[in-house]
Image (cartoon, rainbow, N blue to C red):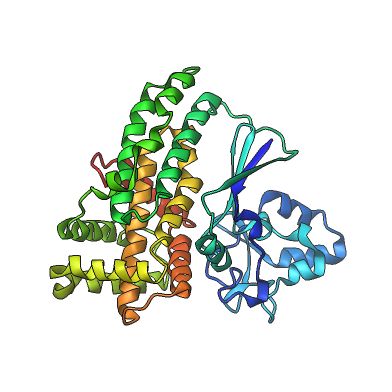
Length: 377
């Protein structure tokens, strides 16, 4: 099997007790997979009782109990006492793998690291060549699924390569870029709709050299006026503020954003305000973070079109995620007296990812909203 991953993937090492936001000290439920639960059942009697004492069932799903605001196995030093006492084999899959994630496409396994971890976010936003994808041979068996079409997969991967390439064009305006990418996804959808099994060569030929058609000039000629910026901010705020799984803390973030959007001075001068923010981010080396974020979203989600054949959905996800993160950043910059450092970059991306990407309810709601919205986001 081929294992494909971003260049930065193997740079991740858990910072454990040095982490400022330990993922074991949280209000989310840490699920225990069936294999791990089975190992608890078959463990020697002298430790079985203790292992099972840390488990309870929430809606019939086994999860670790909580103590003092974190996992019951979290010790006073911020380390996993389960791992320390009994070894990795008794940790749940999520404990061993987080923030890593993997998707399978036939004989291809793609792996990355998720932004909801602060160390992963630091690595992604400081990597000089985050667009590079590496490959290696691994011994895992090929993933067999009746929904998988290798010809369609070639097309989808090629489309993703094109989009990733376009994000690497230097100094493009981020607003114009994400609108361009969204429109290309709509064009790609026509190719997907016309595809029939075995017809990949014809479509691949049409896609050949497509990335070369896009230049700094062709992207930046897309005009994004203040009215567009304001309406996009209002729309994306409405989308995200109505999600079903708004956890404690994030409601305060949304309230802060809402107050800024109600500020008449900001609304009347949105063009100048956002222009000043963009210039600050550019001058301080943070403007390119949004392109890194776009590439993260493209790598993690675009290839899922191999199974649902919905490229338009991926484009809507890209533009909405980008738009909300920038809105969140803008409000934080404003609150910080027009300052936004790397620690802010990591924090807002991490919080956004944890609240959105790692909430099944929120992701499902967003997918449904996008699916039943026929217009451009």
